[in-house]
Amino acid sequence: MRYLTDRKRAEGLGSANSGVHHFWAMKLTSVGLLFLIPVFIFMFGSMLGRPHAEVVAYFARPFPALVAALTIIVGFKHFRDGVQVLLEDYVHGTARTVWIILLTCVSYGAMAAGLFAIAKIAL
Amino acid sequence: MADVNRGDRPLSPHLTIYRPQITSISSILTRITGNALLLGALLMVWWFLAAAAGPDYFATVDGIVTSWVGDLIMFGSLWAIWYHTLAGVRHLIWDTGAMLEI
Image (cartoon, rainbow over all chains, first blue to last red; front, side, top):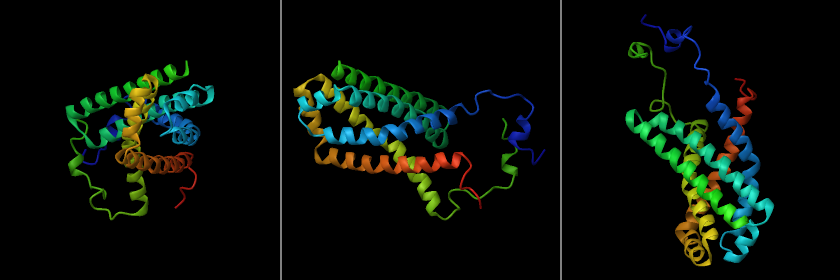
């Protein structure tokens, strides 16, 4: 009993059926961002500091608008899943639950705000 | 609780015992950069919202994002996002099981 591990105690009790979901979500979003981020960095960087009319005209074009929208969607989903691991490692008890809920709201809130902005600029 | 006997088991070396190595520093920097990028990302979303709102509000927000504080955050974020991206490539390679021979 003394050396019985958590795994040994849990074995045979059935699977949770969602063990690799988080890992897979991180992997999918990271591969997506690997393509999106380098493109988005140069698009955003070249427009930062430019006059309003130029910025709006640029992000109204299909390719910049789509890259920006996809980067915002995939990026904030990746952040939400990543920050959950950070919180699970360092915050405990009720505070952990509250922080996960809070940063999930921030992530999806920022995602929605960003998409709204891109849609309004592009359409 | 599942961990009633945890205290009786031998403890493996952990964070406060190990001397920092290049691999552990790289690992923690990946985590720090990834999570710190929230700040730059929120500024970026704010900048897009301002662009959608109109020229007057855009001038205010663009002024903040391109002020010296904004420049500092954006320059830090630029470094952080490239670091995190390249560190992420290492993780994608490791996930295939490659390059892990001792």
